[in-house]
Length: 506
Ligand code: NAD
Image 1 (cartoon, rainbow, N blue to C red):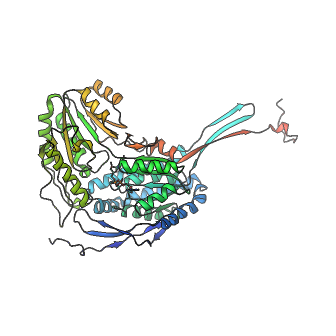
Image 2: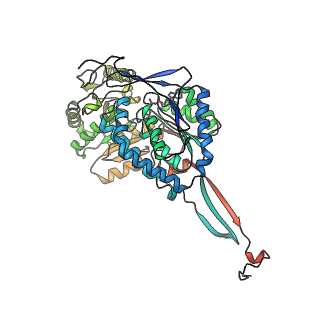
Image 3: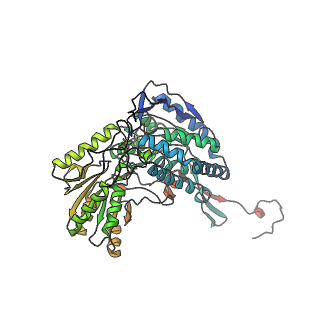
């Protein structure tokens, strides 16, 4: 098949989405969107100016009063309709994700399903928003509490989950009565626009869900605009820290989820075939571009040689290529990401790590010049090597060898990140200690990627999350609403001097 050139595909021009319709970009600043499996440019994306960002926020602000006053019954009917449409058309969204992110179609479908779980959770909003009431707190005095929406909420998302990460937030925000401005990653903008169309089809009023494309200019507008009441951010740690500091300084509530370095500890009693299978899934799924990917396998005791051999055998069997062709692993998102990851492998090798499986060269099942790095396994990795200290965000598994369980836990607790971690063992007592001692937000026991269900909340510790509220679940409902307590005194009718036929009770 011929290699596609940059001119061989139709290059679409994308728009923002505000007030229920596409809005053309006028800033003159544009980013190119590529298909990472072929390297072809597929779209041009407008990058908003400050005034364009203000116009999108204004559309969301204008829609808020009517949406917050729309009954819960009506709001949840729209949520249910959105769920049905997404169920029917999930394949379309998965294809869009694969075309811009590169992950294989089955991973893209899995991403949509995990996002859909949050929609289903948000369908239960009438129950989740129920307040509490106390009768006769003082004589003749009753108290009740309600939770009310914030207003316009900002969501800023990363490239690696174009649909799921925005869906961690917007179903809950919308069901709770807020209006949304979503600023997707400029690398993967089309999923957000597809979701906007789906909301329109589901009957969501214009202006409740808006998409603002852009870079730092758009983000800075959201962080500083007095009309934006909260920020939900997911991305790398340096930007998460910046977002947290800037938006809180402007009086907003913020949840800013950052990067990760997730360890998988394998104890000597573990089932090593299970551990090897799961290390491969968790290390190379979505080409390692997952904030819950395992990047460090910590082999405890004398199992390391056997474990490394079993992981290597499985890694070598993976087929890397275009995610639309039934391959096991797709490309990295950009040429720059590919070069960065390859550079880390070079650095690990130079620092003394053993390259057991080398993904820097290989045969890829794809046409064109895609951004591929194959599965890579490094052994004898030290804690001072950049392959260990940095988040690589690519298909690179590092094996560290330690002598004891205690050393493995020390390693994890000394790491500045604390997103996810897993322990492989058949010892319930060890598992119990691990979940108690380890300073990480999400723990898996014989489960390598312990992403919580939508009705629990998702979030890490330390440099993996700035703020104290995790995503979705009841913490999400709390984040997107604020509490109000009403204290009421009604005089008994018998005291009002009007005879309504009530018996006197004094
Ligand atoms: P990124 O930080 O580069 O970008 C995230 C968002 O911030 C994008 O929308 C981007 O446009 C914006 N942005 C980038 N630079 C900015 C700047 N200087 N000022 C203001 N805004 C800016 O992250 P990414 O490369 O898109 O995503 C990968 C990162 O996201 C990894 O570090 C990964 O671990 C992390 N991530 C974390 C989680 C989690 O749950 N903790 C989930 C998914 C991804």
